[in-house]
Image (tube, rainbow over all chains, first blue to last red):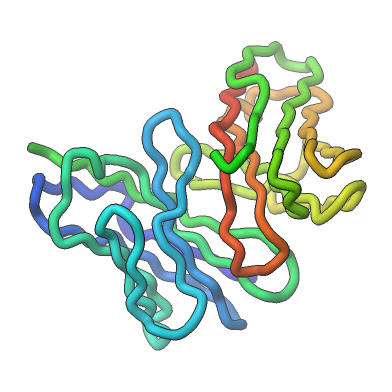
Length: 114
Length: 113
C-alpha cells in the first residue's frame, strides 16, 4: 500500500518570500502525484499533478512541484507568496493497481504574513 | 465544484441516532468517494464506488455504510452515530483512469453530541 508524509504541519512565511512545502511518498509501484489546496470552509481544489514525463510540473496560481523518484519526493514551491495563498495544502498519491483512490498526506498549513 | 452537491452542509445529531449524508453529481462520473477530514489526519477514505451498486471499503469504513442506486447519487450512512464520527465529510468524483484527479464537493460538517 502507498503512503504520503508531509513533513511540516505548519509553515509560516512572509509575503513575497519563497516557500517550499515538502512531501514524501512510499509505494512499491509507479505513482501519480497530486497537490491540492483547501481554502477555509471549502473543498479541495487541484493545484497540479504529475503523471509522467518532465519532472517539473507547473500548476495554477504560480505553484510548481518537482518529482524526484530517487528521493521519493514531490515538493511544492512558489517563488513569491501572497497573502491569498494562506490555506492548507495536501499532497496525494494514486497508483494504477488495486484500490482506485487517492491517499492523502496529513496536510501543511501555509500562513502568509504581511 | 465540478457539479457536486453535498447535503446537508451542516448537521448536529445525538449519539446513537442514524444519519445519512447525500452526494449528488451532474458529471456522470463513474467513481465516487467519501472521505472524512480530521485535524492531523488529512483526508481518509471511508468508502468508494466504481459504479451503480458497486462499492468497496476504504481505510476507515467501520461504522459506515454506503449505497449507490443511481450514477448521480452516493449516500453515506452512519447507522448509530458516535462522537468519534464528528468530522467534516467530503464527497469526491473522478474519471475512470488512476491518474484522473478527484473533484471535491464543499463538505458536510457533522457534529455528534
